[in-house]
Length: 216
Image 1 (cartoon, rainbow, N blue to C red):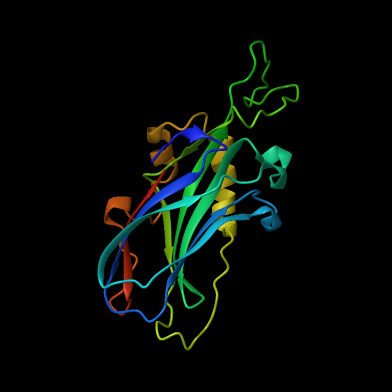
Image 2 (cartoon, one colour):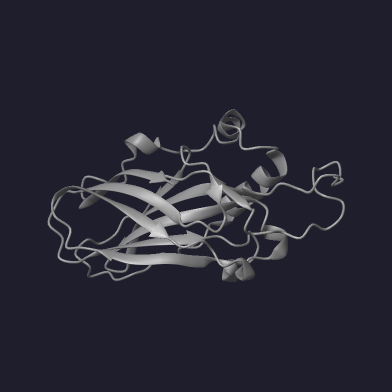
């Protein structure tokens, strides 16, 4: 939905999930923007929403989140590749996380000179009103966690991006010259990802399975 788009536009995720058993509490959904590969304090929670009561069966809704605050993003991390996370928790226990690579880019003024790595030689002032954002929506990185669905083991899993994902984002930023789908497929062909259209985030003992998450 609305991808690619301008940086200041809201994120929109169309979410479909199946509830296998009756739940006695709401599901909590979060959208987290990773503002720096080196500093987790710059991660921004863009949206937190409770969904419930959740009926048994297939459920569908659009999760919308505001764009990140540019002032909370390190200047050197504004352009290039980062990650946005969508997480789902039950009774303060995160059981599903989907990470999408995000590329922020802008059109440089005519006559801009670049170095051999494709970066402008002279510092360019970023105009956030003209900055564009593209999400690699068809290649999510899926993580799931076993939880106690009775809620007796109240625990919260850290939502920040893992070191592995941070390193991968850095590698992509250095290696990707554009967001061509073929190049991205080559970068991620060794990932243990599941197809977004067939995403199954539930074990036999789980009460909720997330069926589809389509970013923007």
